[in-house]
Image 1 (cartoon, rainbow, N blue to C red):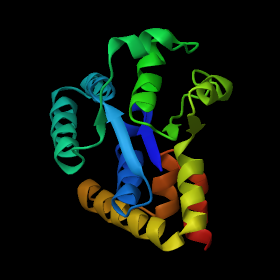
Image 2 (cartoon, helix red, strand yellow; image 1 turned 30 degrees about the horizontal axis):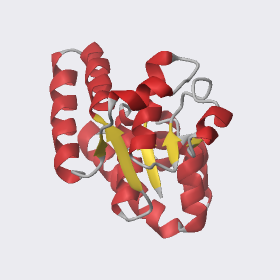
Image 3 (cartoon, rainbow, N blue to C red; image 1 turned 45 degrees about the vertical axis):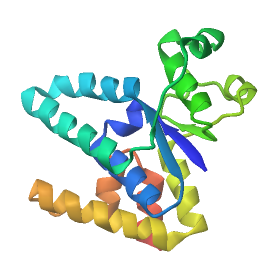
Length: 181
C-alpha cells in the first residue's frame, strides 16, 4: 500500500514519527512532494529560528531515509484536477503521480471521498489508519509506538505515558487501544 502524507500529518512530530516508524516496519510505503515538505518548513517558522532549524534537519533526514518517497508531476496533471480548496490540489496531484492508494490527512472537508475516488485514491485519518494497521498486526504498531515513546521521553526530559502522548498527537483511539490491550 502506498500512502501520501499531507503536511498536516507530517508537521506534528509524534504523528510523523508514528507514521514513519510503522512504514519502516513494512506496513506501507510513504509518499510526499517537495511542496508538502516546503509547507512543513513554512509552518515550522512559527516556532522561531529553532523550529526552522529542527524542521530543516528533520526534512533532510527524510530525504536520506526515504529517497524514493518524494514524487513529482508535470504541471498538466495539476491543471486537470479539482478540489474544494485549490491550494490542496497539489496534494491530490502528488497522490496520483505517486500511484498512492490513499491520502493521510486531517483535512477531511477539502478532500471529498467522491472526488478522490474518481482518481482512484482514498482518504484516511492517521488515527484510524494506524488503528487499522494495529488490528491487522499489533506487534508492528506496538514496536513503533514504544520507539516513539522512548524518543519523546528522552527528548523532552519528561516521562510520558503512551495514551497521553498519542492523545496529544491526535492519535487518541490508537493510544487507547495500545494501553487497553
